[in-house]
Image (tube, rainbow, N blue to C red; front, side, top):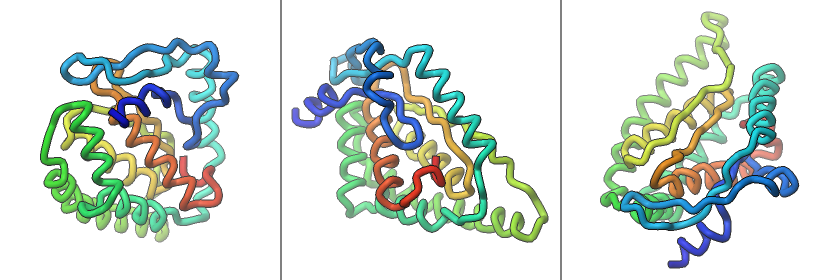
Length: 208
């Protein structure tokens, strides 16, 4: 019940550069009720208006044009990842609880452990990629990566890993939430990630 109250009090909204939009921009956005996988109402969401969409498109373009890859954010992202997906940690418990309430799928801890095994391989591949760029063997395309959200927990973790792998390579990410059922847990994950980024870096423009 407490989680559902939060989902009503703090509606799904657009995040830009890890932060919610200014209140004056969101003031004319329509509020709608969200539903879980069984069709039960469980919270609120703000429907982005044209102004919001245009602002986000501009932000993504600026991230592409102005990104300065003179810093290495890999360690920051991997620290955040370890906090998010520690099977014994509080944040992993939040992810599992949100998923269970929204999608009614169980055994999220096992799926997080499986995701960590896959992430270990992906991190090694990214290490090779970034090392090759430093050697001028390749050049990484840092136009924004589009990541779509789904409700299945394994796929949710797969997609979240795509976000993290792109971010650690300095690639901006645009993440779309679901517009049907079970959209709450996906937004709560994105908001949690955004909050962690702001906590662990003093310049959020480095990670977008």
